[in-house]
Image 1 (cartoon, rainbow, N blue to C red):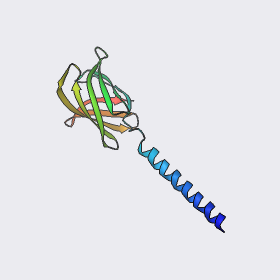
Image 2: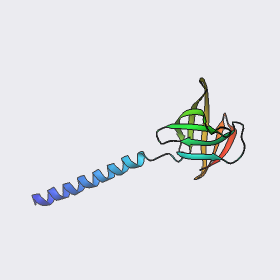
Image 3: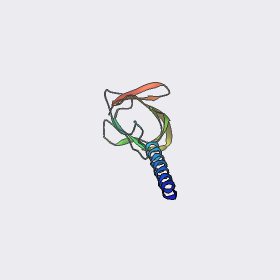
Image 4: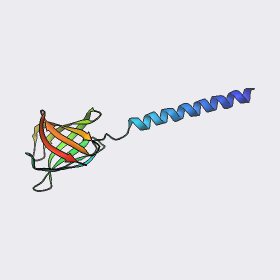
Length: 122
């Protein structure tokens, strides 16, 4: 009888451990905004792409020189939206805030103060 109880407790512990592990792993999954987003059309910033890393940084690249024109830290504003806190690469005293909103799995828009800056594709 004692062995059955020990086996039963061991199964419960294993099940709980598995469940907790799954919760931890799912909580650490990448935001759908992470990745490389390329602009679809000309835009006011002359962006060519945005590279959003899993580590919480992002770079906005210029179409003209393919160098980063903004360096950003991002936070999840919603399940489908990132808020980008950026500085100009050549003058870190200038700060700007952008929103990257995922429209569909591979489509997004970059806005600033609700004004559309660029449409992007992953």
